[in-house]
Length: 395
Image (cartoon, rainbow, N blue to C red; front, side):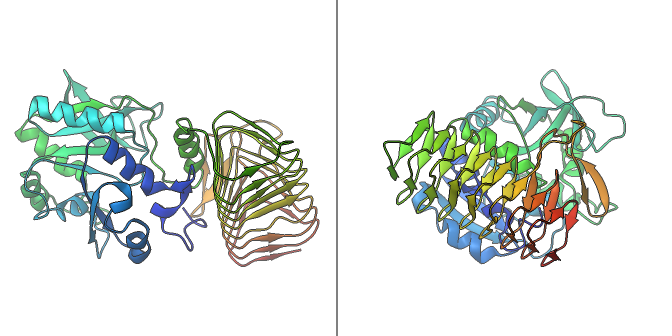
C-alpha cells in the first residue's frame, strides 16, 4: 500500500469519509456483533487511539498484538483464551456489509458447523480457490495455476473452539507462515464446513488502487447530510455529505455520492463528480475538477487542476494548472510497477497514487498510473510518470 502507508497504518486509510477499519466495525455492529477483538501490529498505538474501547461505535473492543507476522492461521490462533464458543474471524481489509454478517451467522446457527464465506470472481488464480459441492466446502487450493472454480476464500469465517487444535497442528508453509488454507484442509477432512456465498460485491484492499473501488462501493449507501454552509449559488445534487465548518462557495457543482469532511473549502466555480471522498481542512478551488478520487486531510487542489481516478495523500498541494492524466491514449488497462514487477491493475482509468506532503509547481503534468512517494517536490512544468521515490526533487 506504499506510499499511502508511509505515515498512516493501513486500517486508518480514509475511504468514503472514514478510516477503512471503521466501516468494517460498523458492518459487524449492524450485523449483530457486540464484542470485537482487533489484532494489531505496526503503529498499534494509533489504531487504539482511533477506536478506543468502542464506545463511540456501539461495540466493545479489545486488542491483541501479533509480534511476528506468521500467517493468518497464527493470527486467528491468538484468539485462543479470548473466546468461549463459536466466533467470527475476518480479515480487516475486506469490504463487508451488515447483510453479509447476518447471513453467515444465520447459516452457522442452522448448521452448527464451521462456515467459510466465498465470493465469485472472474480471475480466481491470485486467491485461495474453493471447491463447493451441495453447499459444503470439499477443497481449497492457494493460488492455483489451473483453478477448479471461480469461488474464492473471502476472508470471513465462523469457527468453533476446536479450530485452535487444528491451528496447533498446522505446519509452516514454504514461505514460513502458518496458512489458514492448510488449517481449513484439515478441518474439511474431519467435519463438514459449509460455504456461504456473499450476497454483496466483495473486494479485498491489497493495493492502493483497490481503495478507489472500496470507496465507490461504500459511497453507494451514503445518505445526504449538510452540516456546513452552502452558498445559494452552489449546486448540490444527489447524496452528498458535507461536514461541519465546510464552506461551499457560489458556482460549485457537487454531484453525489460525494463526502466532504470538516473545515474544508469548496469552490468557487469547481466541479466535484461522483464517488469522491474529500477529507478535513481540504480545498478544491476555482476551475478545478475532481472525480472518483480520494483526497486526504489537509490537501489542496486550489487552481485550474484536474484530478481523476486518483488518491492524494495528506497535506499535498497542487500548483496552479497541475493536471493528472487518467486514461491511456490507446485505452488499454493501466500497468504499475510494484516491487520491481509490472502489475496490470485491470483498470482503464487510473490517475496518480500520491503520498503525503507532495508539492507540485504550476503546470506540472502527471501521467497515467504514476506513483509518487511521500515528501516529493515536482517543479513547474515538469512531466512525471512511473514510480517516483520518496522525497524526490523533479525539475
